[in-house]
Length: 184
Image (cartoon, rainbow, N blue to C red; front, side):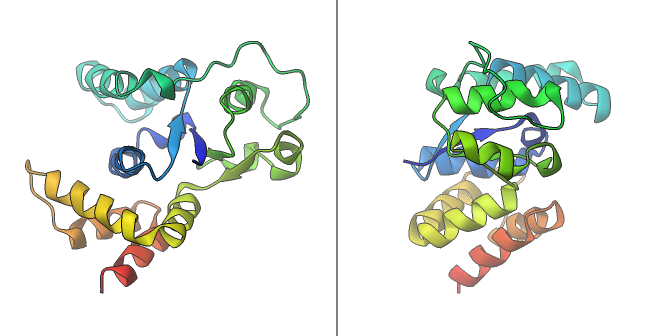
C-alpha cells in the first residue's frame, strides 16, 4: 500500500483532511505524520487562522487517536542525505523516510525539491496531485469513499456537488474534476 507523509500545512484544510483520512479508512493509502507536525498544525490553527484552542485541541486529538501506526518519528535525525532549502523542514523528511513513505504531501513544494528527495526514495506532491493520482489508480474505491464521506455529513448535510465545489475552491480543482467525471 502507498504510504504518504502528511505535512503540517495539510491539516488546517479540514475538508481536505476529511478526504485524506476517509481514503485511509478505505485503504486507498496509509497516511503518516509526526507529533512535531501535529504541534506545528496546532500553532497554525491558533496563531494564523485564529481558531480557538478548544476547537484545535479537539480536532488534533481526534487525528492523534485515529491510529497510532500513523505516527512516525523524526528520530534518529537523518544525516544530511537530503539537503532541503528550509532546515526547519528536515524533521518532515526524516519522519517520512523513517516511516517508509513514498510521498510527502504538502502545499509547500518549494521547500521540498524532488531532486534532493529522490536520493531517499521520496517525492513531494501537492495534495491535489496526490488525490488526483489516487483517483486515477483506484477510481471505483475513491468514489465509494467520497460517497461515504458526503453521506456521513449531517451537521450540516452536504451534497457531492457542495463537497466538490468546496474542494475545488480550496486548491483541489483537478481532484474535484476527476471525481465529477467519474460520478457521471
